[in-house]
View 1: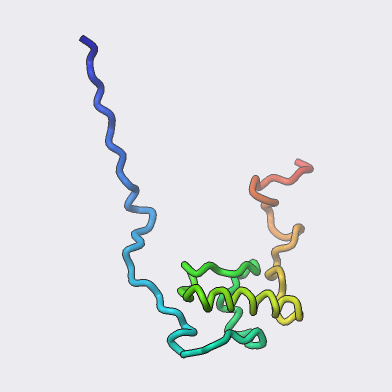
View 2: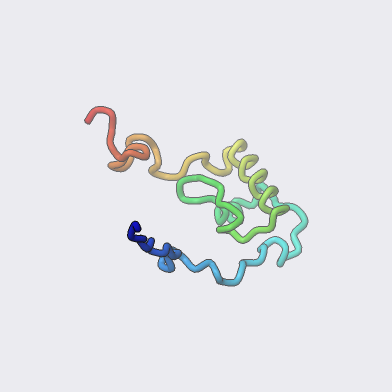
Amino acid sequence: MAKQRSRPTRRRDRKAGGGGGRRKSCQYCRDKVEFVDYKDINALKKFVSDRGKIRSRRITGACRRHQNQIARAVKRARELALLPYVGEGSGPDEGESRGRGGRGRDR
């Protein structure tokens, strides 16, 4: 008879974030705002990362309706040059790492 091996049981890594916290409520729903204004740059900057990307609902805590309005307002503000498409210092010559690999082509 062959000897049976016991497999080690896999467990979830508890260090990598719990996720059991309270969900943020939508800022625009709390303030009872009907439409997100693309001219309100200070409010829109809270929903854009330092690299210029629009933050997700999971991070901002906005509801689905207002997140769609935020995305549309950010895109409209970018088109009118009220918000930049790219954040400060994120051009190709800035920083050491280039792309995902971290190595340039000339190396």
